[in-house]
Image 1 (tube, rainbow, N blue to C red):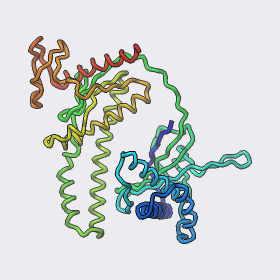
Image 2 (image 1 turned 180 degrees about the horizontal axis):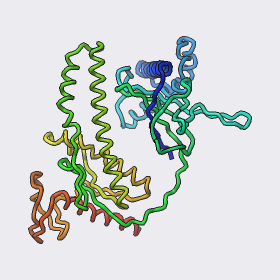
Image 3 (image 1 turned 45 degrees about the horizontal axis):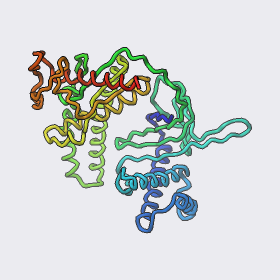
Image 4 (image 1 turned 180 degrees about the vertical axis):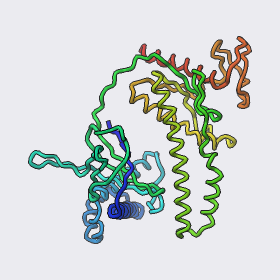
Length: 378
């Protein structure tokens, strides 16, 4: 099983210069072969790697950087074309130096006189990582981890638009088969805009609306950026401010989501949520900004991943399951809840008064329970 560990990097001035040179060489190789593919015909990876060896004569400055990263640029170009032909993505575009920069390098191992050597090594006790050409670089992250079990496959060095450096290390771990948890507690969750997560236990997690809180400042900085001369020092300073603000929004949202998901997965064995069609929901222009800000899809992905790690169960009910319309006591359906402003309603058959969201989460829970027993009994 491949698993990625992301660390914050603190390179010195010499290492920073070499990282930037590698970014430039990586972009050059990627754009050079993409241009050839556009003008003539799509080349095979073998032919591109063969030509890369000859390019060292015409472009001797390519020798200054890690050779693995240049070959990875070719493999990434091939992946981009594969995604295009499989209709997973658009046609590959040329890379520029203004967006997020990154390069990947592969881990190469060898042995000499019974001792094993590797060009990528991770030392979590000393908080250092050894990378090709860069040497030892200081890192931070995973404070509670002393060692990573598994073989390092590759490492990706990233420079965010905020100016921070990260390294993502992919490790081939031996997948330990977790014992299936005997379910003792089940919970249904309803995702919403007013409250982000509503559970069948009656607990509500408020929607922080992070984008809305910073929207005024975002508009002001974007307005200022649009007036400045593109490429000037002031333009770059304002762009950096904007990047830092977007990073703050992303990290705030991510931290809050992880807080909720950790609590739900720790306390429950079966978690059931609804499968939402975000693309269709975002067509509502009155709610589209709030829906996209809530990141429903990301919550479901994190839940799915976390539950798998813990050996628990996660189910998603059908998109069109009428969870808000159905009374959880007598299963009577109503059309009152078609209007979003109706937050509470009374069942016409049994007379029970419902909170719209809690009732929906309870129906989702019951539906998930049916799904679980239908799978277990097969």
